[in-house]
Image (spheres, rainbow, N blue to C red):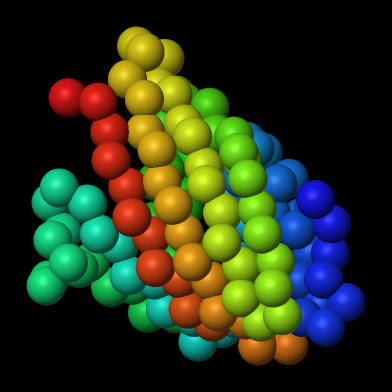
Length: 121
């Protein structure tokens, strides 16, 4: 995994951010006006949860990284101004989460993310 020259996106920073223990590195990859759409059991495709801007994204990431769980970047593909990646997570009680994301970039920063996630029940 590496960095795509055209996009300026740092895939290694994405790995460090996802697998780190705080949200700061991951948050630094987002543009100020970024938007995340989350689709899961609670937020169906016709009514996704939508986060606007770094403040809302920061609140979500801070919540996620405050939990007793591990995060692993499984795969990442960078193609120009688009990035796709798979992430697996596990809570301390063994519950697992899998997510897939598609990103759109501007000047190497994430401007849009669609996140689809599922977890053990």
